Image 1 (cartoon, rainbow over the protein chains, first blue to last red):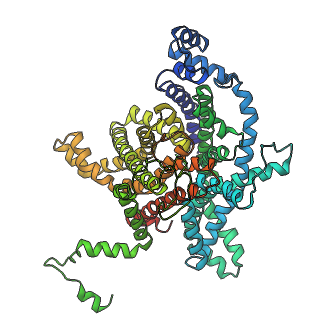
Image 2 (cartoon, rainbow over the protein chains, first blue to last red):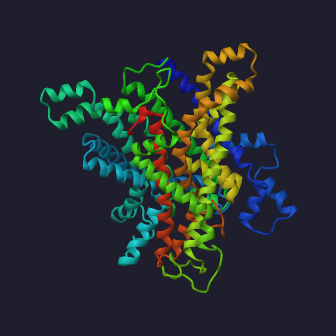
Image 3 (cartoon, rainbow over the protein chains, first blue to last red):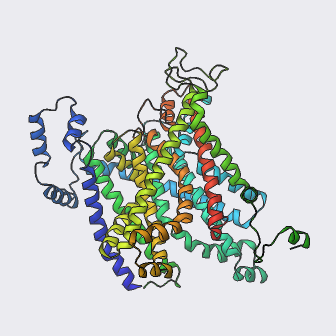
Amino acid sequence: MRNYIFRRLMLLPITVLLLSIFVFGLIRLVPGSVIDARLSAGFPGTANADDRAKLEAHFGLDKPVHIQYINWIGQVFTGDFGTSWLTKEDILDNFRRRMPVTIELLFLTLLIYIPLGIGTGVWSAVRQNRTDDYSIRFITILFLAIPNFWLATLVVVVPLVLWSYAPPVPYVQLWEEPGTNLVQMIVPAAIAALAGAAVLGRVARSEMLEVLRQDYVRTAYAKGLSGYVVVVRHALRNAMIPLITLIGLVFANGVAGAVIVEQIFAIPGMGRYLVQSLLNNDLPVVQVWMLIFGAAFIMVNLLVDLSYGMFDPRIRFQ
Amino acid sequence: MSSAQQTAITFDAYGIPEKPPVSVRMRRLLAQHPLGAFGLLIVVFVVFLAAVGPLIAGDAETISPNILAGPSGEHWFGTDRLGRDYLARVVAGARLSMSLALGAMAIGVGVALVLGMVSAYAKGAVDLFLQRIIDMLLAFPGLVLLLLLSQVIGRGWQSVALGMGILFAVGMVRIVRASTLATLAESYVEAAQLIGASPYRILWRHVLPNMGPPLLIYVTALLGGAILFEGALSFLGLGVPPPDPSWGRMLTEARTNWKHPHLSIFPGVAMTIAVLGFNLVGDSVRDIFDPRLRGA
């Protein structure tokens, strides 16, 4: 086990290094050059050889690629994320402002996502092949098919058409007006959570069905424990172990959901920042965004892998 | 088993029950998987619409002065902000969506087969390096990776297909590699190597046919996802550019004309039905080929 953890931790810097090279290299494959994108993003139609040379020197693009990479990665590590091409704002400042917004959204999403997914999954398993099981499974299948961006559009449009109701705009921070902020955030969070909860619910159901067939569950019932105690203390605990593998997926789904709902509900978080930057070819932002979130996804996956042994002592890694 | 049932089964000279004809087995399969059969019905309908629908529903680009009209006898789904028939556009959207989903899947399977088999056959440094890259890419949520790829490849439906193809390949390389490794460990592969079969022959004749079921499960499960990914990308303005009628972009445009709810209802319903059909078929395909996961 210790060896396994050691090996995984040793691989982590290598994976992150690969990630940084990948993100850096990929962005430089953009059709045309980075400078073309810059010229069309900033002042369209003014591209001439003079501007080009000046810009290349300004962004350090006149140096060889590996020098550029080393400069960039050095700056990122010292906390200098560079400036946006579009708004000329400091990217780190933007991250500082937007990250809490997305973290709040993610937190609310998970707060709905996990209980809803596990709750419906467990309920469905306990009531296997009865009406509630069938209804839950039907709704689950349906929610896996409904595009979340369509649902979000309907949630905005329908109240507007029927009751002329619109959620309060513009966005306010949680610490300024907590009530208004929650009204603005809870619907996007719910929409980001729904499809993911459906996936989680399906897996939770099948894991629960597996565990409910075990002898120790029958024993627990036989010695007269209540249904609640058997399901929650005996069955659910064991069903949870495989569900831990899904935490990485839950986090990834949450971020993907945030990208969509922040755009639709005009929430100034990290997801909207990414989409706006992509739409405007704002490459420095895209680059740093992918590096930071990529590293976060890799870390979460690593933690999930390492946590198996902790939750299930039977698992011993070579 | 009752005696009446036993007499119904005929035996040949070797005592092996005769396989019923394909049509009978097909019917039994569909009866055992009613949801899958329902899904298949939807898929067949959507594919039919995609193939011949535009001929029936009319031209999706014809502009009329009758803009933003609600559903009527003349325009069943109403018209959009340029007066184009919305039914024709939704149907044309089915064609785009299907082509992109299937095209992306073909690209994904092709890339994954090559990379996965090379990775498993080469072993050593190549394998380790390729798998580290795949590890890294798998850490990203599909949509985010797709957004990054769209930035690199550019806009347009070919780029969307390529981007989604790469995304699916990332997920499939693992499956191909694992399946290749399992087959290469079989003794019949060793025998083939001993009689001097080339690596190509081994991969083509022995490894590839074993890949069928796992790949089929993965591909059918992902087709619905492909429709959703394309929709999301176009919805964000990073997918298929106008004037091609993409369901995702129609939904974006519907938001600016929110006073005309028919604009946001029809493409959304179409998309949900198509994804539902593919998901149901995918679930049944998985049940049939991988009974361990039944009911999951």
